[in-house]
Amino acid sequence: MGISTSIFDEDYNSLELLKTYLGDDEHSNALAIHSDEYDFDAADWNRVVAGLSECALRARIGNLIALSFSQANCVATQTDVNLTRDGDSANKRFVAPFKGSVVAMSINCENARSAGTCIVNWRKGTVSSMTKGTLACVLNADPTQIDTATQDPGVETFTAGQVIDVVVTTDSGWAASTTPSLICDLILSLGD
Image 1 (cartoon, one colour):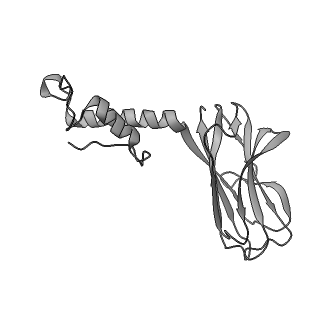
Image 2 (spheres, helix red, strand yellow):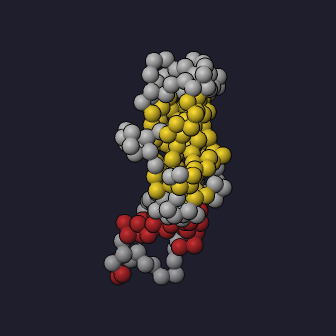
Image 3 (tube, helix red, strand yellow):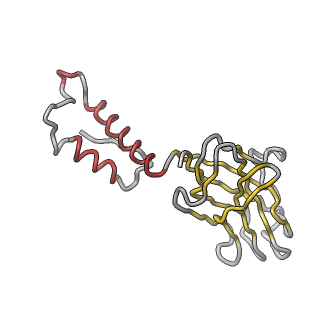
């Protein structure tokens, strides 16, 4: 019988722990709950173990959601200019439905940087008062096109109802070919 698991649990630590306590092919339970007598087959057993593994993983890192922000033409000499959501210039912010924390972000520029520096930050607060987080992505001499940053859940938190957005700052020397598009993905862990 093969035990399935979530694609999110790459190291399988929680699955192995659950298998040891709950039983599998090598470790049988005192009462075989996957027998025909109880109408609980191998597929049911797989779903139970996979579900418990997913619960253990979510307890460890929370429920993750990804927000995507972009700018169609990332030009030089910008200071804290909002990236937009869904390509809509009026849609620049996300209102957090629950408390949580920022755990990762990444940026991808359409063309490789040839000069200058581009910094992308996330912010939280209210529409009239935003505070920058410390997690940021930077394109300069290295890396020139893609950058990522991660941190543990709970390091930089937000509360339910706070506004979250992403801003870009470029220096006067910033260049990345003609009209380079910039995309930022921000990963939130909800419920921290």
